[in-house]
Image 1 (cartoon, rainbow over the protein chains, first blue to last red):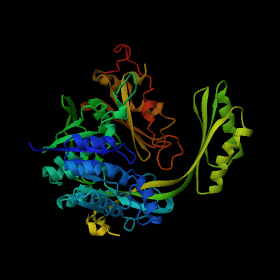
Image 2: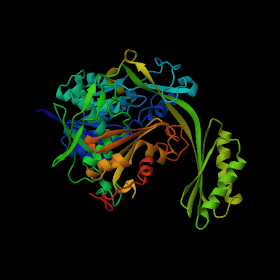
Image 3: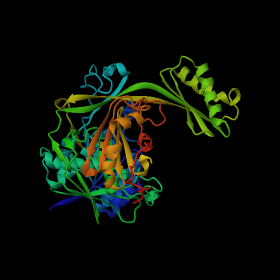
Image 4: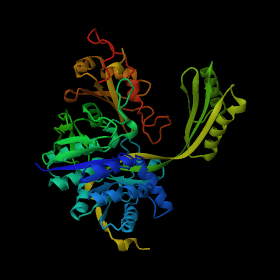
Length: 428
Length: 112
């Protein structure tokens, strides 16, 4: 039976780069996926784009691609990534320029159409709290989760590097699997199977023993050299998960089980743009070469797509101070009392972290008022000379907060577009 | 004994919903977990952190119990004031749940 090998070389925006390099050189991959777009990342990126029209893609894209595209080109591995974030076309031009510079003819395609700010109904209630979207704050972005059907035309056009904005994470894997194995996305059996593979791989090291170690209980070898996963997927949808020999980590029934249920709020109905996945009958078995998964079931894809709406929620201040030694907990509690007394009326959270003799007071608040934010930081800092004995190590951090609210949009209002980025598009 | 002696756990989050998956190290203890780790006990144990309903899904194929916890108090990731805005540490909090092994388990069965 035909099989294809797909790997995951990044599970979040800040992920390590060497494991993906290793996969490109040694795994014999057909496709490599770099999943780098968190829920809030796109709203942050949209803000950067508003101040600089050439920005708004993942700022780590150049560094990541500098190291990964040369071996991808060398070994003929197709690369798919959502590092386009809020500006996939700009990401495509940067990528084209990089490939031109190294003399690679690899074709770059960009998938857009996830930005639905103009189409989404902002009077609709957010599904988290029932409050209309526009009442959350100034809206900065609205992105629909596109599916594998949005990516397939780029693959059919022969693209070697595919850059998207918001796409459902498993769809980044399902699309190349469907393309390699000749699957029809309307077939729920293979679409469910490919979605399961994508769901398992999308967090990269979390499948291969990252986020798993508990010394003495779950020992994981060589985490400093954690290997990232790949899957050999057969045309019938069964998959064997593996990682490269000589890498750290562990891939077992235990690690796969954890990832299988990760973030699934209904095991009978995990909704993606491509399918409603039912994982209840999935089997996970260890084999000498890896871990075999089978048994995904599904029903037809939903009529509406999820939309993440980003809004300005103000700024958050976090201020901390430490107390250690005998009676530290009492001194930290007194410090908390002083701060809350002096700032009475402000909605803030004060908590003492740590044990009896090593405590850290943490004060946090969200506000739209810079004066309030700075006052909270100053009150914690003034504990140095005005608070209980022995306070030290004050840190104050103030940062912008982008909130995310979710809604649904009818599928027909979302129109994905694929653009091939030619060298001429890059010329200054 | 604590649940930590028998099982491992992974937390996930979707907005202000937390998911907690519990897996016995030794799958013979799945029935013990079915008995000991009920939705009610999880809700009580995490009452300080979870305001809403706790729903338990049983997945015998995977020897897994999967808890879906609604209205996580510090949840929402983006606008939470908690240090751990994702609620990722809820997994370890759940593992501090006392369980009765009723004579069928002795000591730590953990490391495989």
